[in-house]
Structure formats: structure tokens, C-alpha cells
Image: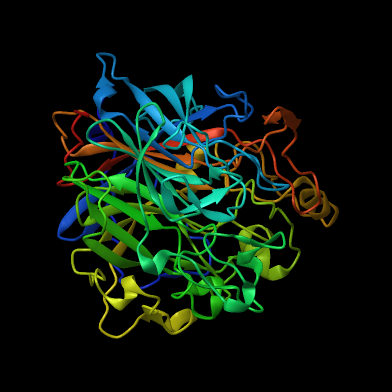
Length: 553
């Protein structure tokens, strides 16, 4: 099989940089043709996106080693010690994946955090032909339960306490450590780091899942509540109501936003630095508690070379996330495209996955007959933005030791289009890199961007409009996993495969959770969901200067 670079034209595009939120009021579609290469000039280097070269699926109804629906990928990483290229051009390795907190559409449940292990085989397809989704295959190998220092499993119910044995300032419920595991990283010694949304803590975990240590959040990330609420600690609900929906009065006024804690974590290739990133802005940086004002999130860097759980960060930066108009028809932005995962290329440079909340699984499947929605196929909630950005903190202001870290001083001012860091602060530089919304590339593998449910399609047909319905090949709402592995191509040593994985929220028609069967799909008109497999997209990219991580010692 010939190499990609020998078979595709170099249709080079250059994207602009930004230090502030970029707004997308219509779907951000990538027009790059199948077989072409897109170039991004960033931080003095040229990065190449050589396109989608493979797709793989794993059944949504699959059961893990603990007897529960396996769930998909809130995060994943390939063990670098296992990655191999074979004589037939295929690749193989061990993939560790992280589900989040179980099937919880009705309520939060006593789901024990865990890691899943797979054997991965990949055969890239460098042609321009229409093919199936068979290039990447996964074979399930087992489940590792995450436990506290005493070997007790964690839980995913709402935290109500902050002390557990020798651990303090951690989310606790019913005598268990509460954990909504969202980010996974492999340390140089082969152990793992797991990031948590509840406590905004980082857990250091042994290969057998046992807790080894914890990195507590800086003060600016610890939740602060109004005195009238009577709340303390990491509680995320008031009388059963999600705090994120409570705006009058605004119960939480500072710290990590509920359900928006450490969404991403990674270790730099040299094994020295540990990097974590909030899903969106802290409460104090969300002006007026408006979703469009959640755009300036925090990225924190620790030096873990001398201590696996360092007490304080050495880097703390603002990173601007895109804002979007959810309807995609040109109205002002009303949402932030929160980040869902990162890969650390070095101490200052990162790949960051950001996305909107539209797509299969979101429950936003309505048809809109308005003429203004014709441009988005009359979808009430079209997919507007899902992309992997390049981020550099090289010239950003380091907030370590400032009141923006040691307290709750807002680091952001303005609102909507005027949202910006306060005077004197500079956010990280960002540039769009790998845009998942390339209709032509997706179609080559049988994928689409349809979001309208069966009821909406029927309504449209009655009005004389023939529209496609969302199906199992429609892009899902949540894309939350990133991993980078080398192509091991001597002619192109800086070429890597970028794996992007979805999180289907355990949605399946044949699910099982804590010993009970469930059907997680919805047939409610305008809120339909369809079976969405655990899915991985694989892109070939050039990452100049990136040095592959060494195998664990």
C-alpha cells in the first residue's frame, strides 16, 4: 500500500490564530476534499491534517468485566510500550479507556469508577474510495475497578461530605469516595492519573486500580456557595435539583462549575509534566452565569518529575474556548463549546478537543419548519462545532501565586462578544486544527451529520420536504477522547495517528446497570435517540517537534 503523502494532492489551507473566543453562528464545516491535506501554521511550525484514514466501532450494548454496560470513551490512552507496526502495514497496541459515571438518565447511581482494557488493531485506509467502518477493531480484555487507599470502590452519587479516612477536602458520599472520572493519563512508570469532575481533584492510581495519591485543587477551583444556601464542599444538587440549573439565586458563586471539573488530563511526552484542564470556565469567570460566558477555562501544569502528586502547580493559564449559536442559523452565540479532552505535545503546546452539545444522544432531535432553518436542513439543533484545536501557553500570563489562583478574583470581564481577560492578563493562543465536521470525509466511511428524529422526518414529509433521519451512523453528541500514536514511518517521522473517541453515555436499547436491565433510547417526538456505537475516528496528522512518549519504566 502506498503512503498517504504519495497519493493525495497537497491542497494547503492556512488558518488564523486567536487569543480570544471565536464565535461560530453557522455550522463550522470543513470543505477540504477527500485525499487533500490541510496545513495550519502555529507557533512557528507547520502542522498538517492529512485526513480521516479509518473508523472503528464497538457495540453499545457490550458488557464489561463487572457485568455492567461497558459505556464508551470519556477518555482513552494507548500504552506506548505496546504500540507496534507490522509487516502488512497494520498496527496494534493496548488501549485503556475510561467510562464516566454509569447510566444516570433517571438519577445519579452507585456506579464504581473503572478502567477498561482493549487490544486494538488498526489498518489505515489511504484510498479515496467509499469504505466501511472496519479499519480499527477492538477486543475487550478486562475491567479494573478504581478503589480508595483501603481497596473500597468509589461511587457516582452526589457528594455530601468532604472527609474519608485520611483523605480530606474530597467529595464523599455514603462512606465512599465520589468519583466522576473524565480524564486518563499514563505516567512514566506505567501507573495512571485520573481526573475527577466532582472534586476537581487528580488521582494517582496504580495499575491494579488502587489509589496511590491525590492532587488537591487550587483555591480558585474549590466550590464556593452563598451563605443562604447552607452548602459546603462539593455538593452538586439542592433538594434534588442540579445546581447548574439554579440561577435565582445563584447558589454556587466560585470554583469549578458543577459537572465541569477536570475534564482532561495528560502527561507530557518526556514524562515530566502533568497537565489538566477544566471543561469550561470557573463560576467566578462566568459573567452573569450565562452559558456563552463560560468561554475562558483554566489549564494547569504540575511538575511531577520529583513527586507523583505535587502540592502546587508551576503553570496556570486561561484558554479561550469557541462560542456557538446553538441553532446554527446566524443568531448571536448563546453557548460555549466546552472542551472534552487534551493531549500534551510538550510543556506549552496541546491538542484540545472542543464541541457543541448537538448530535445523536443529545435529545435535541426536533424538526423546525421555519424558512430560516432551511440552511441547516430544518434541524432545530444541527451540529455546529466539533473540532481539535492547537493551543499554546508560551506567551500566556501565568496565574500561579496570583489572586486569580489563591482566591476567587474574576480573571475575565465583559459579556458575550466583549468577553475577555481582565486588563494585564493574556490567554493562550489557539488555532483550529482537525475539524470533525468534514462531510465528505465522514461520508467516505458512511457517517453523516443528521440530527432530526423520526417524528420530525414524518412531519417534514407531510409538508413535502424529504429529509434524512438520524441513524446509527450519525455523528454522536459527545466526543471526549483523544490519543496520539506514531505512524512509525521512516520517510515521515513526524506523522502520527490521532484517535478521537465518542462518549455515548451508556445509551443502548439493551443495557444493564447494577443488575438491572434498561432501554436508554428515547422515542419521544423531538427527543429521539438511536443506538450509537462506541466509535473511534482516526486521522493522520503531522506534529512537528513532537517526540513520542517513551515506554513506561
